[in-house]
Length: 265
View 1: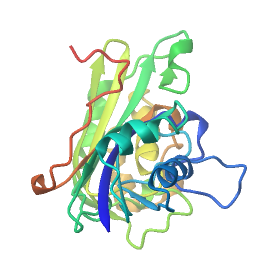
View 2: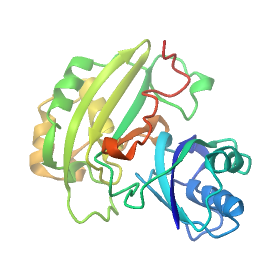
View 3: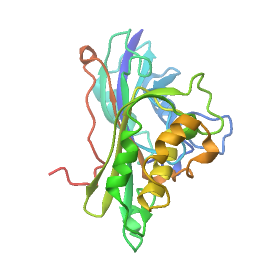
View 4: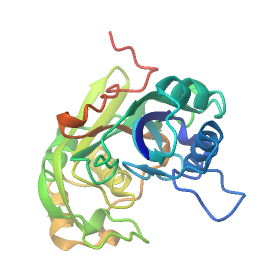
C-alpha cells in the first residue's frame, strides 16, 4: 500500500464544504477529489484532510493524504487528477510520503487568513472572495483585541453551535491584522480550530474596529465563555486556509501566503 500526500487549492464558493455529505444535492470538495482519484487509481480512494473547511471557505494549500494499492506517479496524481476535477479545484503538488504521515494528526498548526475589503463600493471581481465593510475600521484596536487570543484559552465564546470537539481549549500561536491597500487581512495560526472559530473571532473583531466594543472585550469573552455574548459569525466568503505546518522531516511543501489575486511582488 502506498501513501500519497496532495496540496489542494480550491474556490469554496460553490461547495458545501470539504466533507462528503449524505445528500446528493450537496456538492463537496472531498467527493469531487475522491471520484477523480478513484478513476486514476482504478480503485476506491478515501482521503483525509488537514482541516475540514466549511461551506464557502477557500483553501490555498489544503493538505490531504490517501492510501492506494497502486502508485501512478506524481504526474498522474496531479495533472491526471486535475483533468477530472471541476476548474474550482486543483491539485497543486503531489508526493509520496512515509506511511506514518497523517494529514490531520501529523499537523502542528493550521494557518488561516480572512480578507476584509474596506471600500464604499462593491467590487464584482471580489464577489465571494472577500467581505466588504464600507466604514473605516480601527486596526490598532483590532490588533489589541487579537493579542488577547495568544496562548491557550477556552474558546467557547467563539465556538459554533454543533461543534463536536471534546474540548473548547485551543492554542493560538499568532493573531494579527495587517493592511494591504484597501484590504484588512486577519492572520491566525493555532494548533487546531473549533467550528466557525475564525469567523466568530472576525465578527467580534469587526465590532471592535467599528467602535461598538472596546478591545478588552475579548478578555471578557474568553473569561465568560458564552457564545451569545460575542459578535455575529462573519461570512465564509473571506476565509482562506492558507497553509498547514508539519515537522520538516515529512518534506511537505509550503503554500502561498495570500490568494493568487494578490501580487506577491
